[in-house]
Image (cartoon, rainbow, N blue to C red; front, top):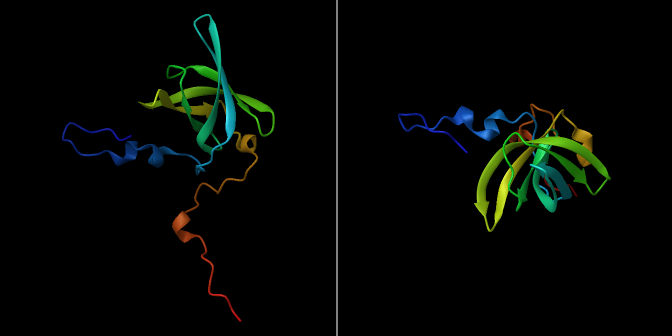
Length: 132
């Protein structure tokens, strides 16, 4: 999501990919999101669209507000963490794209290793020809 200046030019520095602190991994992992709106509690089973050491992106039917705190439960390891809703995207087929950020970086929450912050996918080694 890029913002436009008054001149109509894109401000690339405002693009989420330019602000990301760690590499994200596109993976569908089952999670449960629990929270409270007013006096009503809710919980919703969903899957991640992407994850990183600082949180994830999910698609939710439940309406939420930016800045709201929720609990994210990872079914793969029975761990849960408190998160803040940091992004609300477009609604598609009754679900909204929701960015959740952990209160502090927790790369082990996903049971995977993330590339270092300065990793450039363009520099990764490609397999060479098979030697016979």
